[in-house]
Image (cartoon, rainbow over all chains, first blue to last red; front, top):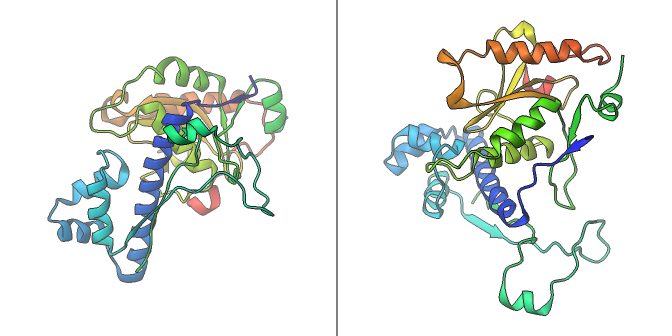
Length: 126
Length: 158
């Protein structure tokens, strides 16, 4: 065996990547706000009326993330949340490879395909 | 003495292939000791997701290795750390529930030797058996010197 993949299945992988994206975006935003205006986890906890350990657990993944928690943290970071579902289909003239075949008409009508690009969560500075 | 590529071809190391999107490129490399790959599939794959977690232990490892490979910033202490004694040059990558012990043989590269559920760590988080296992594996590996990066600062290592 020369290489190893931890195969999760495309549907589940979409969820795993979403959780990873949210965590990354929040920690990145906090690092930027900390550098810009000294915002800390303790400040976020104060703004949200929570214990600092609750904020730490949310940011490190040791506690479930909900959309409400994401919105609360974005509020405390003073950043809006943007959700993107970019197409895997490369734009004309781009160098993108590994583009999947187009969905069948039926699949497009009835479901969100599991092999779509995972969503991107961006916490943007106002 | 051999390169990482030669050791992979010989089956002494296994190159981890992260599940990347078409537009993503690997920025860092991960290799598994064969025993680690066995542990992932035999032991970790069967572990259920804790109710307080979003991801199962295997999913946590998959996402952590993905973050590592695509070059996301690592926070020392939260995502990884060099284990004591520092002179052993053994590191751990951390997920919420899993500890992955190994070492960086080159910058932006990690060889995972053994893993352990955080809750199964020996009393007082004694890493000595895991560190010894990683050292033994490294010693036996016919890798070109230097076999490990000596630094502690994240920007020197990853």
